[in-house]
Image (cartoon, rainbow, N blue to C red):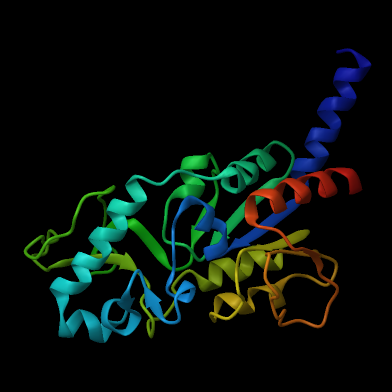
Amino acid sequence: MAINDYFSKYFKMKFKMIKLVILTGAGMSSESGIKTFRDSGGLWEEYDVAEVATPQAWVKNRDLVLRFYNERRQQLASSKPNNGHLGLAKLEKYFDVQIITQNIDDLHERAGSTKVLHLHGELTKARSTVDPSLLYDIGYKDINPGDNCEKGSQLRPHIVWFGEEVPMMDAAANLTGNADIFVVVGSSLNVYPAAGLISYAPAKASLWLIDPKEVVIPVNRKVEVIREMASKGITILAERLLNMI
C-alpha cells in the first residue's frame, strides 16, 4: 500500500470513530416544503392540532384524524430531500453519524442516511390500536376506516401524539450520552422531552446549533451557533468539523 493511501485510510478510520449525533427538527425539512403547526400559530396545515394530533382527537373524530395524516402522506410523496438532508448523509463518509429526528417524514432515509431514530413516529407506517408492537410499512398509501390489523383492530398512524409517551426517548438519550459532537438542526428546542436531549451530551462533547432564528438553548454551556437554514448551515458545519479534526 502506498504511503499516501495508508494515511488516507488511517484518517478515514479515525474520523469514523468520532460519534456525531444530530437532532433534527421541523427546520430540517422546511426547505422541502414540509410544514408544522408552529409555522402558523398552533395550526398544522390549517388544522387545529388538538383536533388531529391528540389521543382525544382520535376518539372524538377518527375519520378526521385519518384524513389529516393521509393528506400529510400524500404531501410527503411529492416532497424531496433538500441539500441539508443530503449533506448529513455525506457526513457518514467521515463520522459515525446517528440522526435523532423529531420529524415524521422519511427524507433522511431517502437522502441516504443509514442510522435514523424517529422520536415522534413515522408517517409511512401504521400500527395496531390494540397492540403497539404490530407495525406495518404502508409507504404513502392512505389509512382508511375499516383498515384493520391482524388482530382485527383499526390501524392508526404510527405517530406519537401530543400527550402520549415518547417510547424512543431512552434510546435517544443513550445515543446523545455517547456523542463526541452533538448538533441541533432546525429545532426550536421548545418541545419536550426532545428539547432536553442536549443536556445528555457529555461535558467533553462539542455542541452546535444550526437555525436562522434565535433559539433559547436549555444548557449553560458553550454552543457554536450557525445562523443559517439547514442546507447552507450543514455545508458550513461539515467544513468546520473537517477542519478542526
